[in-house]
Image (cartoon, rainbow, N blue to C red):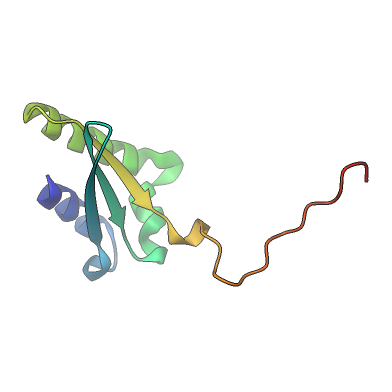
Length: 95
C-alpha cells in the first residue's frame, strides 16, 4: 500500500524527492500521513479536494481488496503556526 501511495504522490508533485509517508495503526485501521513540499500541497489536494478524494478512493479500493481499512491524510505544514509567532488576540466580550 505504501508503494502505491508514494508512486501516485510522486507522479503529481514537482519535487518528488520531498514526498514522505508515515504509517500508524489507529482505531483498527491503518493511517497513512502523506507529506510533500509546501508548494506541492495544492497539487496533491486539488481543486475542491478532488485529487485527494481520488487518491483516497484508489487507496481504499486497493486496501479493501486486501481486506484492510485505511485512511489517507495530507500533512499541510502551511496551516500550522510557526514557533514563536504571535497568535491573534481575541477582543474581550462586550466590545
